Image (tube, rainbow, N blue to C red; front, side):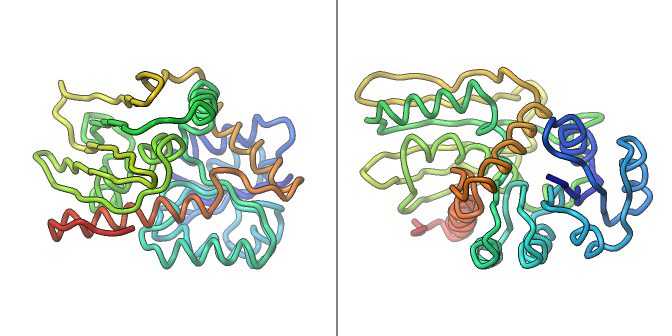
Length: 297
């Protein structure tokens, strides 16, 4: 399958381009970005072509791998889907539920496959853990924390405008929800509160009575960086395992997942519809923290 890479930032270069170039049954057929010089550099590094025109690249490929800010991604994804191209998307799918729904609708109408790269879900150890424990069932609580910082010296995301504006809720929230929803189920309603250092704390109520809490920030104190998830259920307690691959390896697994979905017609668990579900939860959380109310999803 011929992929066009849309985006020229750090993630596009170090993860997506590298994984596409190394994949045994995918071809990096071209690169487009809002910075033509960067697109040319990535294309040259991997022996492919840089495109100045987005539609020309879309016409030349079978699928697109998008590494653009979420407010840009949704419109571009709709454009590609309407051209009949499969979609390998980044998280969050969009910053607005209506925009996310538009991607889902466009993909369904065009009959194209979609996969949203919720990174943890393509890590073998994590995916196996979630599949095994979903089969066990009986989970009634989860607690997750991601205290990260994009402001440490040399961090490649320090200049990310959308991350600075929307914070850990929108950047880290998708990662957290992607490993909580498979065991506790869809969210009914939630409340949220802000804390120091741009931290947001969520209390989520799930279908069936389960509840979870999440604490997220992109501006943790240097000595307070932490990440972990604990689960509690009728059969005991457990924690999310450590990674057993790299980001490039995980993206390679996402490529394989999209290829399988395109060939079989069977949607992947992390398709655009799941991405829309996550966006709706994040939007509800944003309202909840601004209004100090419980918000239905």
